[in-house]
Length: 217
Length: 174
Image (cartoon, rainbow over all chains, first blue to last red; front, top):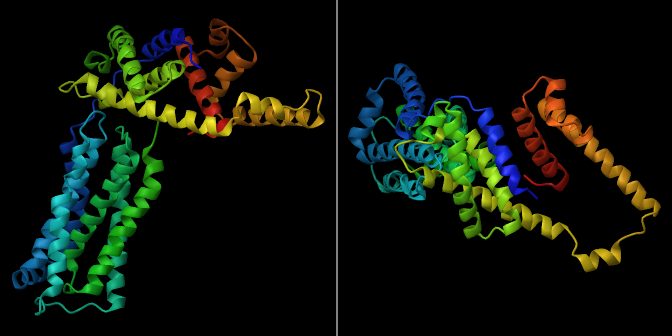
């Protein structure tokens, strides 16, 4: 049991070892830093695949564009909420920020399955091709999650599980958005389920490991 | 706190001393027992020290400190809950207490001593040094500081962290 007098000696000891610190950048600026990595991946993918096939698909089937927009905004808001919540004293309401774009993402993807025509330049993915989407989303999520965890550990996430959930959501949404650049398959139930499975795996893996990684004391 | 972030030790000492009352109030509100309040105070102060760069001077210091204190209070309640479940109550313990000269009790004591030695050996070098000098050899802070070449403040902080790590290892706390 701690002795009240030892509060004073601890304060004296901590003051004695005080060194100046560099203040943490505001959450929005840290979000921009993380988005720079996403943008780098996007530039590389555009350099390889070009933007024409993606724009042609979107023109023919606007629901694909809405789903991609939803995924992009989900990634931005989830990362922003994660950085905001990693600063002690910020409102827990931040955690709800990614919900509306996530609903747009899921809703537009689901509606795409109800379309009766195929988007231009696409086919319905076979199970094997859908598995490629799974690998793509998970593979891109790994560096994106790692960078987010590293950045969040510089702050003080007092709710490590919630932070890990947001890390998973942000990186899975960003990966799904990047996939849209080279995704030559139309919205279909199997493909949508594969995407949902990949997002689920990324979020679950982050929650399983992130709680531990982010709960530095 | 803004001045402390820039390295002003006097301002830091003052803001930490002023924080104790708020930390105790937060911990009490969370339901922490009176005899455990100072544990929460010290855990919170150590966290504040580690994450002082996250304080934004344009926002409320009390909200920032209160959030950290609230989390450390919950940690204290959880670890106490775990300890209570593991430990026996007095009347049960008396019934089960073996004689002092019992061979198995002696073996158990030896085993505990070995566990403690192993746990100390696994501490980071700075913390191990603080336990060995201050705890095992019972040297004064000044003697230990002279012997190790570290300042007394660093030794005290290292000892505090080492005891926390040992408690965690031996009692299975986080």
